Amino acid sequence: MRKIAVGILVFEGCQESGLTAPLDVFRIVDALSAAGVAPEPVAFEARFISIGGGLRRTAGDLRIQTEPADVAGLDALIIPGVHHRDVADLLYALTGLDAEAAWLARIAAAGTPVLASCSAVFLLGAAGVLDGRRATTSWWLGPALHERFPKVHLEADGRIVADGVCVSAAGVTSYHDLALWLVQRFAGEDLRRACAKFLLLDLDRQTQTPFVIDRLMESPRQDLLAKARDWLNERLAQSVRIEDLARHCGVSQRTLLRRFRDTADRTPARYLQTLRLARAKALLEDTALAAAEVAAQCGYADVATFRKTFKLRIRLTPQQYRDRFRRGRDAPDADGG
Image 1 (spheres, rainbow, N blue to C red):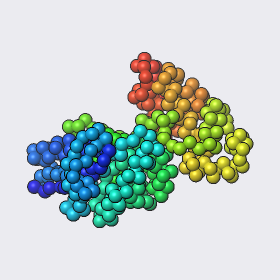
Image 2: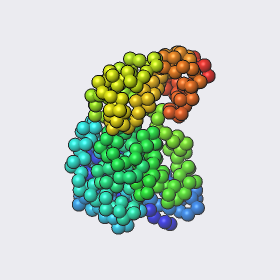
Image 3: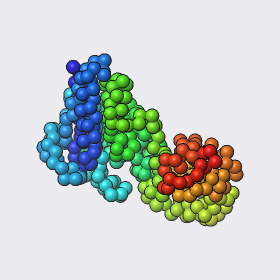
Image 4: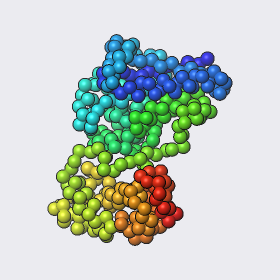
């Protein structure tokens, strides 16, 4: 039987889900492997490790006994989330994890896969191992990750992104996805899919875009961007000219474009589209308006363009989005979605 050694990095104040969720997956995988699902029997061996070893406390005050961190003998490493209340708290917590970041840089340089989800991706960023690589994180932390680590190529809507030795995932529940990624890498797709069925996990969902709550996106407030956003939100149903927006913000069009690129990583037109789609999602969730009415209130000249744009950006049709996220269950069909 082939054994796969997976280190789980434990540090003071880490989140418990990154420690326990992989263990649940590995136990199921081991049982399925023993039952003959995999062509070659495998056993995943999880090891709690820390800088220096010894007892560590999680954010929920669980005491975890760990062994000293060592690159030798590890087939992969999982990093649990960094507990935080908001982005400022997360960035402050990172300042106390310099030793962990330095060790992560060494293990990544040695070629060992390192896997992180949600806030843990920031620790990979602090280690410098994501520079020049593609990565994702939870949708609400995406803007802050982009600002703090601009050399990272953020795939904001990705569910799981692998680039070289670095594997990143979206929300905190994505530790199941990361564990299953390891199963696929070391034991094959059949065992991964069998385990996913036991856990009732949807392997075909490739994006986190439908789950975004735009008003909760975490990003340091930028005065010009905030001024532009407030002005645009009042005119979502209207035709908007960039010269009028620049005049309202008190800057030239060239400065406006540069500031949007630097602070929002998109053009004003793309930003306006994001605001319009956020309004559309809210209307689909909270009202019984038909798709044509939603389109009109969000500044789309015709419903066909609205449906095409919505499907392209949100990865669901308007009707599919309403069916999944509407607050009441009596909303009529949105004209076929």
